[in-house]
Structure formats: C-alpha cells, structure tokens
Amino acid sequence: MSNFAEAWNTAATTTLGLFWMAFWAFGLGYVISSLIQVFVTQERMQRTMGDTGTKSVFLGTFFGFISSSCSFAALSTTRALFAKGAGLIPSLAFLLASTNLVIELGIVIAVFLSWQFVVGEYVGGILLILFMWLVVRLTKSEKLIEEAREHAQEKEGHDHDHGGDEDQNWKQLITSREGWQKVAGKYVMEWQMVWKDVTIGFTIAGIIAAFVPKSFFEALFIGSGNSEPALYEVLAQTLVGPIAAFFTFIGSMGNIPLAAVLYSNGVSYAGIMAFIFSDLVVFPVLRIQAKYYGWKMAVYILCVFLAVLVATATLMHYGFALTGMLPDPSTAKSVTDREFFAVDYTLFLNTAFIALSLGFVTWKAMTSGIAWKPGKATSERVLLGLSIVAMLWLIVGISIPIFTAMG
Image 1 (cartoon, rainbow, N blue to C red):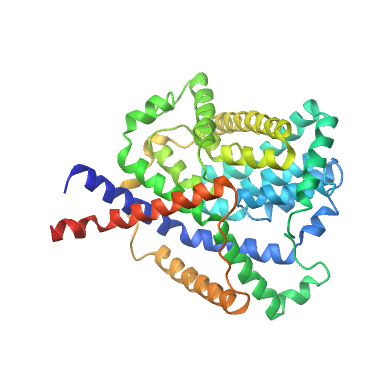
Image 2 (cartoon, rainbow, N blue to C red; image 1 turned 45 degrees about the horizontal axis):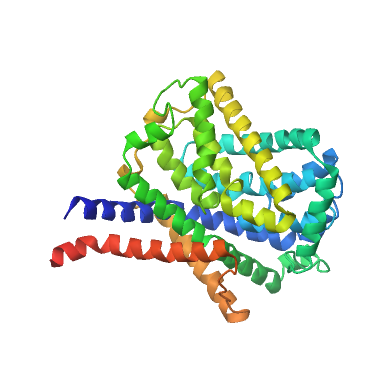
C-alpha cells in the first residue's frame, strides 16, 4: 500500500471513528433540543423580548440556551424574533446563546476535548453576550437598526412558521401521542439540518489529522506547542482561529472535531476557543445575515462578533492560567492514535441512540413522511455537493485495504 493510500485509509478511519465517538452525544443533544422546541414555542419567546432591558437580554439568552444548536436554524429564528419586535441586543443574545450555550454542544466538546473547554464554552458564551451587549450599546445606530428591521420584516413575510401550536397546552402535548410524534419530527429535522455540516466537518478533521504535518500548525498558529505562549502569540492565535473558520461552510457542531485536531497539534487554549466561537463569523453566515438585514447590518454584526470573541477567548485563556486550570496542549493525544471502536460505554450508548433514531425516522416516515428538499441557496448546494464528495472519499478510503488485498 502506497503512503498516500495508507494516509487516505487512516483519514477515512479517523473520520468514522470520530463520528462513532460523537454519535450518542448528537443523539442525546437533539432529543433534548426536540423536546424543548415542541413545548416552548417561538410565539412565547417573541412576547417577552420586545425591548433591550436586562430581563429581555436574560430571556433572549435563556431561550437561546434551550433552542437548536444549528447555526442556520438559529439565524432564521433570530431574524423572525427581530422582525416581530425583539430588540437587537436580545436578538443577538439569543443567536449567541443558541450556538454557544446549548446542551448538545457541551456534550460533544466533552467527548473530544477536556472539561476546561466545556467550562470555557459556557462561561465564554456568557461573556460573549455581555461583551456584545456593551459593544452594541456603545456603537449602535438607531437608523441602521430600523433599516435592518424593515429589511427583516420583508423577508419574514415569506418565511414559514418555526414555532409550535400556541393554542395547545404543553401539558396536553407531553401526555399525548401527537406531542411525541412532533418530538420525533423535530429530531429528524435536526439531523436533516446538520448532516451536511457534520459530514464535511468530520471528513475534513480526518484529512487534516492524517495528511497535515504538525509543522504546518506551528507556522499557521504562531507559538503553538509552547506551554507558555507570549501575549502576542495568544492574540495572534485568537485572530487566526476566526480567519481559518471564516472561509469554511461548517457549523458549530462540525467544528468540534477540527478543534480536537488543532488541540492535538499544540494550538493554545485561546486559539481553540476562538476557533470554536467562530461559527457565527464564517462566510455563509455573513451572506445569510446580509440577505436578512442588508449588508451594512451584516458587516456590523460580523465586526461586533469578531471583536467580542477575540476578547472572550483571550480573557478565558489568562483567567484559566491565573487559576491554574489551563490545559496543556502537549498532553493532548493525537486524534489518529485514539482507539475508536471498543466494547465500552460508547458502544452501548450508540446502540441505544441508533435504535431511537431508527424508531423516530420510521415513525415520521409512516405518519407525515420525510421530505428531502435540497436548499435553494448557493451555500446549501455547495454543502450538498461537498458532502457527497466527502461520502465518496470515505467509502473509497475505508475500502483501500480490500482493494490492496485483491490486487
């Protein structure tokens, strides 16, 4: 077997192994998210987020915390809230919370990284919102906000309903067949929204882990591998993280295995956190924000998010350093050296969630059917194409030992 073919097989095996490690975490997170989405409707959220007071920001954060972690779904819901009267700051608090504070994201981070990153995700998520609140209060333009709201209201007129049945009591839903049928539908919908991001994200993680040498990361992330990087190196890494993420099409859940690869190659805690926080400053998100609010507001939100994520990642890094909780990148195990498939808790949890997923898919298919509609947006079509290429890459890569034996 040639070196390239061997690396290809390693990359494909690593991708499938990483996904095997994370499947139960995705399943658990999406079950929780689906339960909440069925019993907490968007209409209830809209009634409580009409201004920019402390209560509205808190509620925007809370509703984001209990919502879906899919970046694109969060963008759509945020647009709907803002168009129907929610203040800009509560709306952005909802968006940040729904992509940084959600339960399923913390579970996946715990699988691939260490507890310090889980703490950083949730504490950092709160800091992101607080810093965003401060920056927007100091820099906002009422004229720009009103123009963006008018633009969003035009788009909202063509949107579909994201919420549940407002007239039905959640207590009735939770004890009814209809309620659990809706939960099954939401669970399937969650996977439909993220499967492309997950497929591409895990495939890229496997490719980088198998093909990209550590020297590349040391050159890209200045100071990576140093146990005590200088301040300028930390700041440089917090800027490189978002820049590296900007040109990807990968959402928050797909970024975590990539973060694990960066961590195993010596990137600092600040650089990793900046990369994880960058799911809302990627190019597809900028394009969607421009479609929703106009380019001026989209660029403004991008600049605000970029500033606050750099500040948050840096503060978290030195806060953990002062308290002696900073993880040492040199102790991180190489992604390709992990034992992915073993008889352990992952096997039993995955078996349970595979059965649950098959049950939910079958139930939805037999009741309301499963509609597969490729997105009309260019980014969605590109994602679909890349995900198909990724699957072909994985199939061939896994089959290489068979081809070699036959040859």
